[in-house]
Length: 234
Ligand code: PGA
Image 1 (cartoon, protein in one colour):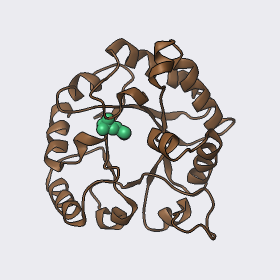
Image 2: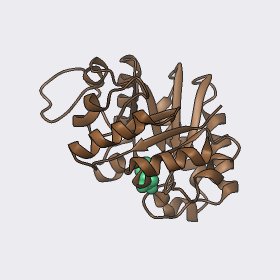
Image 3: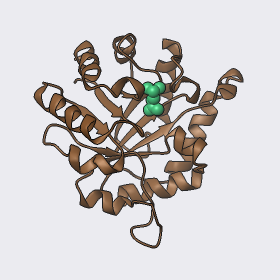
């Protein structure tokens, strides 16, 4: 089974870059690939080759919420996945655990597969609290929820965009721990790693036990680089 590669473009690239990205990816032999662009590019990127993923959604279906986009609306244009609780949402936009839970519920109710992002801050890791922090985030978000299919992205906050990654044993141990925490919520779970994944470390990270794939930020912005990383792990 090949590893799942998810490109999180964040708030990057212009329309012409997106058209070029799509052309390059569609011509390639890449499989098991998901792309998360800004909302305005979701329909542009729709393709038979790969599913598209939103980076956020509002938990109510419709209403007077200027500037927001709901999971129901995302579903209606063909979005199959959505990131929930990315650390940039939690930390820059003050998304609470309650928000994350509401979003996760609405995402599932609307038939979109959630990619739930969890991860500890530097201070938590220094105090050896990473497992506590992550299990709290998971338990709070998932509560008694039963989910058909779930992807969890383990992304230590201190590793995102910093060039730092945890040592291999820590990635393995967190991934197996996360699988044990969510085992009653779903039978179909993939745990992927995110945080400074690039062409120099992707092969090693993807070869680790319990790592089902990777969520790639900065290094995924260039489609040729994305394909290079795919070729390293396929
Ligand atoms: P990064 O971002 O690869 O640039 O560290 C990962 C993410 O935020 O999902």
